[in-house]
Image 1 (cartoon, protein in one colour):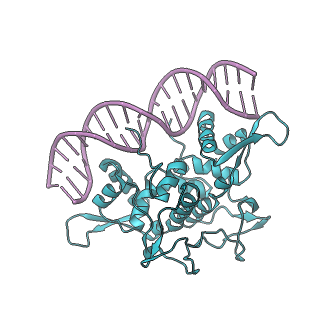
Image 2: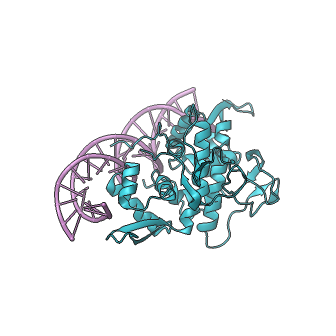
Image 3: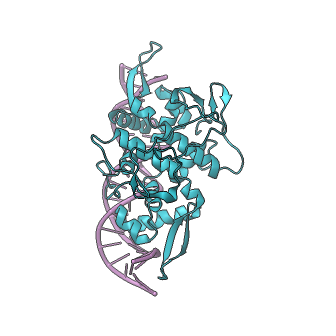
Amino acid sequence: MKRKSLENSQCAIGRSLDRIGDWWTLLIVREALFGARRFSEFQRDLGIAKNTLATRLKTLVADGIFQVQPASDGSAFNEYVLTEKGRGLFPVVIALHQWGETHLFASSCCPVVVDGKEEKPVQRIQVRAHDGRVIQPEELKFISPSAG
Amino acid sequence: MKRKSLENSQCAIGRSLDRIGDWWTLLIVREALFGARRFSEFQRDLGIAKNTLATRLKTLVADGIFQVQPASDGSAFNEYVLTEKGRGLFPVVIALHQWGETHLFASSCCPVVVDGKEEKPVQRIQVRAHDGRVIQPEELKFISPSAG
DNA sequence: CAGTATCCCCCCTGATACTG
DNA sequence: CAGTATCAGGGGGGATACTG
């Protein structure tokens, strides 16, 4: 049977995962956040099959996460750049990075570098209420209707 | 061919996605964050097939994201509760929620409720340097080696 | 209720070859 | 280089039946 679609889920988390919850998508977004633009850059850096990459990029463009534009260096090929919507995934990527860094490495790992200065540890992402108070997971009673 | 494993990727994002990047896992974590504990709760709320759910939960327990414990109500069955590592995914889930809320709904959607009070909009998750300055995606030159 | 076992199909993924 | 086309394998996921 086909995978259940959460495209029209009432839950924002479900909808998000429907768009970007597959295995390759966030890795492609990560590469783009770090500067990749060309088909071959994504392909080389990720080791993804070319047809898989082509399919993913098409979907991402259709979803408005990437946009295609002519190469800035005058060559005949496309560049794939993140839209504002795509750049909006930055906190998701960083949250994943921080979780992995904390829980999946025996020793220290990959640093975060901003403006040439190492930013490790970057101040951790926190979930805050509108009054600025940090919210713990236990306090969260309800975010949204279940995926259904 | 088998899917490429990022289990030992040098990149924390790659490792994270290797554990939780599949389609159902974060939805299960979401349900747990919102209070689900019993097999049937997950199954009913998510509409996931029972065997799929059983497989996922086993993997999540093996990965130390959930732990199994006897039911608190004295019934003979298990409860699946998040470990600290699992609760550490809270910012990831919230980041996904905020992205979806901003970019995937035509109108307003699912509120966030804490302590019975609606917390919408919760102050948005931001990525900050150690000096507290907010970092924009454009400033991020490098997080980690590519997945390889 | 809480799972386990079995079956099956779709599609995701990679490999390879091909085109401009 | 930048893709597209085609093929093959494997596994993820659902449906169903079954057990304690």
